[in-house]
Structures are given as C-alpha cells and as structure tokens.
Length: 393
Ligand code: ADE
Image 1 (cartoon, helix red, strand yellow):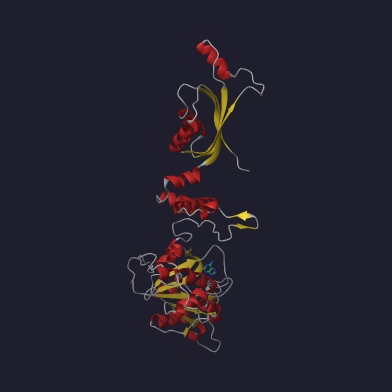
Image 2 (cartoon, rainbow, N blue to C red; image 1 turned 180 degrees about the horizontal axis):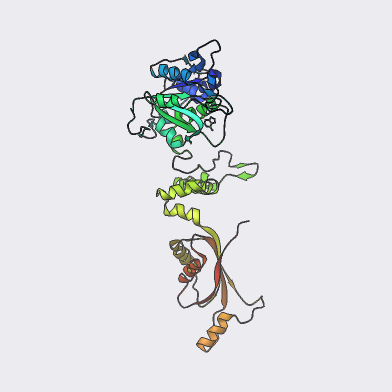
C-alpha cells in the first residue's frame, strides 16, 4: 500500500514512521509520502487560505493550492518518503510464521461505489462534517493500493476541490468522532493506523485482528495475563481451565455483557443481523432469580438431578437447590397446604411441608419460571410460592 498525505505541518505526520507502521515501511509492505501543501502555493506569502465567501469567522483553504497538489499526487508525485524511525528487529519469531498461518486479507470487499473507477486512488478527507469512520471502512480500505489524505485546517477546504478531485479519485469525507480537532492530521494518524494494521502481514498474528472489538460487531471483553492472582485479585478461573470451548463461551459472554452495558445499540444491530445465538440471548436477557416454594407431598431423593436437567431445558440454569423441612425447631402452625390437604383428603398429611429454594438464572418471566419448577416436581404434590428476581445492588 502507498499512503500520501498533504498537510501544512509535515512534521505532524512523523508518528507514521514509528512502531508497527515503521516496521511495515521497513518490510516494504507500506510506502508513505508526506507533502507540504505550501509547495503548491504561489505568491510571495505562499498563502494557502482566504476568508470564507459569504463572510463569517475563520479561513477556508484555497482551491488554487489544493487542486494542483492533488493533481500532481494522482499523477505519481511522491513527495518526501518517510523512512522507518528505527531499525526493527525482524529476527523475532512471529506467531503466523511459527504456526504456519498464511497472512490473509480481512475481507475481500472494497469500497467502490457505482460509477467509480476501482483503480482510482482513494482520497480521504478527515473532517468533523464527514460520515463516521468505522472498522468496516478500515477493513475495506486495507485492500487499497493507494490512499491519499488531505489534511484541512481552519474552517476546512473549499468544497469544489473535492467535486473536481472526483475525476481522479474516489473521494471519502470522514469524521473520527463527534468532536472538533484543530486540523485533520491527528485523524490521519488514527485512520492510517486502523487501516494499515489490517494489511496482511503487518500484524504478526492474523488472528489478533480477527478477534478485535467490532470484528464481530461487539466490543471485546476484558483481557488477563499471568499471574493468576495479582494484588489479591483473581483472574477468572475458567481462563486457566484448559477447556477451550468454555474459554470461548466465557469470552463471548463477557463481550456481550460489556457491549450491552457500554454500547447497547451494537447489540440491537447484532440482533437485527441475526448474529445472536440462543446462548447469546440467554447471556443478555437472563436475570438472577430465586424460586421459593412450600411443597407438600412425597419428594424422592434424586429429584434435584432431574430438576436441574428439566429446568436447563426450560431455560432456567440452576446454581443451587435447597430443601428445608418446616416444623420441629421453628414454631410453625398448620400451613395453608396442610389445611387444604386435610380438607380435600379427610385426613392429615403424613408428609411434612418442606421449603424448596432454587437459585439460578433465567430469561423466563417469573411466573413461567415458577411453572417450570412445578412441572419438574413429582406429580400430585401440593405447592405454594413464587419466583422473584434478585436485585443486584
Ligand atoms: N478534523 C477536525 N475534527 C475532525 C474530526 N472529528 N474527525 C476528522 N477530522 C477532523
């Protein structure tokens, strides 16, 4: 990939030669040319701006300067080539080389609109008035051969520059967020970094960007490394269990919970795109609940196992089941269940009333959760009680 950037502050783009980008330059994956806009300015003052037509504050960048600058870059003018900031150690083993993973493009798709020449360079214009820059664009742009960035300052660049540039370029006006910077240079650094790290071979581990935040429409969950316990805080035990399926499920659950808390609109989008499984829905919708029932009737040992299985099928994941006999040490008069039993059967019950407490998680409405528990009890037992959601404080 080749990147050209036009600015009135070339030194502002110096960071493009550092770290991962510097390394990509050194490896010949990336070429970067920085151009001083004033090279195309004319007149004694080499002025690049003028007051806005129609009046108002600030200055607008002149089309007579930007037009020729973009023409000459489209024609192959290379400007000052950025070299890598430091020699990088290329002798370190890279994950993909060790695992024999071929670096692969993130996506085959490109950002070419109807009527556009797919071979024309992409002219990216950072502006707070642009469409929001997203990971999807970063992915598509990582397949480009030539990106040209036009850094505006002041009140922006005369709009006719882009109408004219559309003859030679595919023009994209993008914003990196809902705030206003002094100029486009910092936005160029942001966009260039997001795009170039997705070029095959730039990251030593192809999987690392395939699991990024946004790559599946969700934010990434929290990360942990050794030691398992640090300053008394434990990393989640599942991560050291060696059970890959459980680790994957845990990570997915954490991503879902974080996304729901921080960016709920991304959950709605994932749901609309059919990207949420039943397990995902359970993670998102389940609440902690307690079911408390008084139960009168013969309840066999071993019912717990059956209850857990039955409730799992119904969408109620059980954490604990407790049975507690009523009576004996507590002062406990005949319960409604016992009175009712005696009225119905004409004799007192030989079984005691027991209190059943189930704790777990479910997305079912509480009434349905209670019905599910009752359906898992032996037939013919009498019961009384309900399920409630545990308020997390
Ligand atoms: N230039 C000034 N503010 C900007 C923003 N938020 N995004 C992109 N370019 C900008």
